[in-house]
Amino acid sequence: VDRLERTCRAHGIRLTRQRRIVLEVLDAATDHPSTHEIHRRATKQHSIAVATVYRVLNSLTAAGLVRRLMLRDGKARYERAGRPLHPHLIDLGTGRIVEVDDGGLADLLAEQARRIGYRLVEYRLTLFGQRATG
Ligand SMILES: [Zn+2]
View (tube, rainbow, N blue to C red):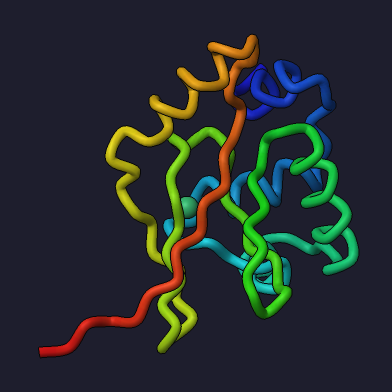
């Protein structure tokens, strides 16, 4: 049993061939790829339909293995959920997604959630910025 199988089991789902392909692409990613970009990367080594990638991303998101980021353009981007929670900044000039240090915000929010009897699983914060010049 390898790492991905254990991760899937811990989230109550089975590791299928298709799920492995998508998870491997996302594990290797240092950015926040879209469904089509994930499909493009996957097909460098595997045969998998874009509709399958779409379906797999939905199930992995529902199982909490993957985070979906919704941008203003309506396109979803994805990242592995195992990484520490962090806000994203969208560069309004280029559309690029930049990860922002949360300055301890996740800890503060976790504490607020704890006070009312919850464990913080996720928070979503998106900043929109313009690159300062000069
Ligand atoms: Zn991120």
